[in-house]
Length: 328
Image: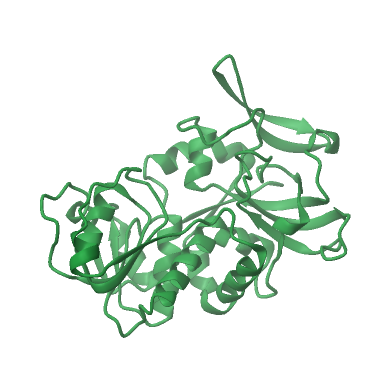
């Protein structure tokens, strides 16, 4: 027997329970993992509170990522005892996820936890930190480097934003961080932000197709009016990497940044990235991420606490990363 958080919906009535399950309840796959840690991401919070149609089959164990040790395996390339991390691939949406003490997954979804991290640190990174690294790689691919000029991170007090600030600052970028949290200034400066701006500067609709050029690049975890304003204020030849929708899915902008300044809008999808690229991304995290800074932005909760902290996250009252110790 093992414990799991289970979501269900019957006749449009949503339910959430902490249940005792057996391995027979798990979906069929070739790798069984003794889960040690998971996380609460924005998407998890939406699922657990039934605030958005994240879950596409019922019942569902939420948790879009997990880390633990392989308990059983039918694959030679994923041996028993290996510490692994799994994120994306429909976990918590179409496949039972990480808010449980056991999980069965497909071997090709697993990535060995880099030796410099333990499984708790792997989940302190989680989908959010992994996404942040993908965003940094996207800026590098576009030749936006530390000498290109300041780069902006929106939603900087959140999980993706905080790791992005830390990574970019550690690589030598001049990082400007946007936040709506009054207590965020000292926190973001400690992560490496050179300048902290109030999100209100960017969150309202603008009637101007272009603004004064301020940033060579940006990592946007917010979307909507914020993303439109960031595009309008990006320097010629710059790149804005979009990875979130905390403000909204809409994007009301003009073609002006693209045809008058040659700005690139690049999307990042962390869910279905092929395994070789995942391995490379985790290798970069192992070399580029300051684990002391990671610890400073991480809080740990139990499975029982997930519903409560999910509501707090959606209300904007959670800073940094939320790790779930499933055995606590």
